[in-house]
Length: 168
Length: 325
Image (cartoon, rainbow over all chains, first blue to last red; front, side):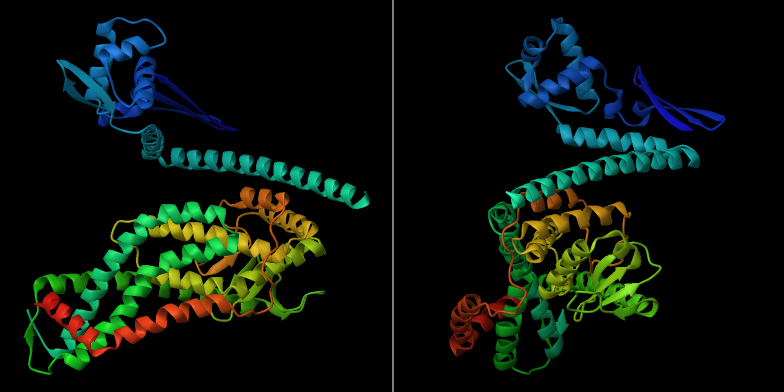
């Protein structure tokens, strides 16, 4: 039985693959080569990005006021600056304060995150690539089966309805 | 660059095609989102026609203009003198048009060749047979994977494998075959070839491809409509046939010119639509679209008359002279 687990911590994505009796540990640092890699975002950074995607643009003051939990101004400022340095935000100066806006849309960010994950995985030895593809095919197959079951159920219901109507 | 008479004509035709296609392609590019939105409100067949017309419009109109104005004005008014100077911009435009056409034609010929190879192979492996209750013969493949396709461009054939016949009930098979016959009646494989031949609106644009995807979806829906002809039980049979064929496994796409019963990723939408009850489809008997033909003649006849007036050709020739020098 093959299984795949992914654990993220401190900007690292740790991929654990168990394949039969063999166990391989692959440690891939996504943040290493690509400064804009979304996989390296922490919870606060993700919260700030979510807020900026919603707002379009905001200053440090705006972000502090809109975050769900109260945080120090300097903490938020550092977070925004870090996101800017990672290439995820643009900034412009307005009345002696920076106004930040997302450089990537949410969709682009998700696309990039998935792309980075898959690219990182496929860059590992051949078995990892095969395993990923096999997991994906299996997952898609299961989803397809569920979808076809659901469609068949709807057809059965419709058939019953038509026969009932025909008899009436 | 100095070019002789015949090469100047080629260069003029290609450069004119490039410029006109660019302008019309830009217009089509802007109209594409609105056309796709409008298509949602139309019947499937009308939506497919609208999208196909918009996709083919820039290439067709540019080709007609070149053939109807550019070539006659050049042959009639250009003196057959020795070689003349042609500007580098015109040559660049001609080369760009040549490259677009070469790419499109290579794509279309490759697809057509693959389609023909596939049909020949199936005909070698299968046999022509008349299924019980069916009006037209099909090609039956005994050992092939689950396929039910329409292959061929000018004389398309329905190819069906034994696995599909075994999986479907008589009504479901009849509905599925009616669907494929509707594609054959609409000449959808030929339309696919025209789509492959038409260059993209302009370099790096993807809206032409988006239009083709939308057309493909509505062409499937239109074939569904024709197959069920407004009958709820036929709708149900076709929906069940789609799901059963999907369960038999994915079918590789041999060529863009082979129409499969299942289109990529459109299954849930098609089944839901069939269960909702589709509008009555078009009749499968040939009919003359009198209004469409009359409207086309009414628009084209004055345009052709205008095109061949000496003044028009003179003006066009002056314009082309400016373009070339």
